[in-house]
Length: 182
Image (cartoon, rainbow, N blue to C red; front, side, top):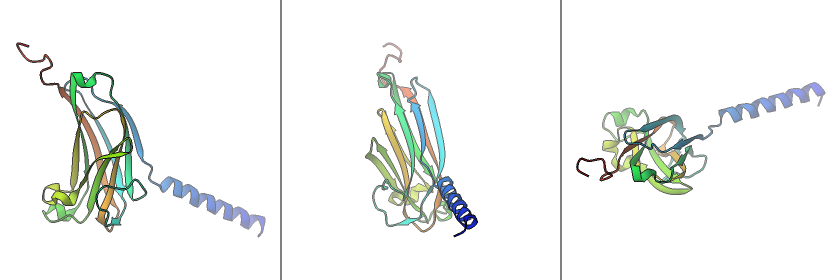
């Protein structure tokens, strides 16, 4: 092989490798602290793509068939003595059939792990009449740790773009001296 041909082959290989690295979805990561005063809230939004797949049942696997988003949550000592926090994770996608009240074309699954252990998952097909192309789960007073939010296809023959959101809202702790006469 001539030098010129070898250089062209090397250049082409590097271009393909670079393109593959750029095109590969990488899990997003956010480091946040739980809201600390009643009425405080925070919002994190992201976009992802649930890869096409078939016949995944139960929770999403932590592999290439799942779009992952990572949240590193810090809860300062005593926070839940002052506030109750609801952390709502939502995914939504466009599905023309589900929007018409029919079983959705894309069967997506939302799974949340805390420090590597599954804590909750939902499959849109569980309650498709109410799902309307979205799934949400709520975690109350989530502990410090690393949360992985995974979205995968239970059964979908096409990649499905979705939007994800985490909303954390702090409310008053009942009976915490905030009422009259206490």
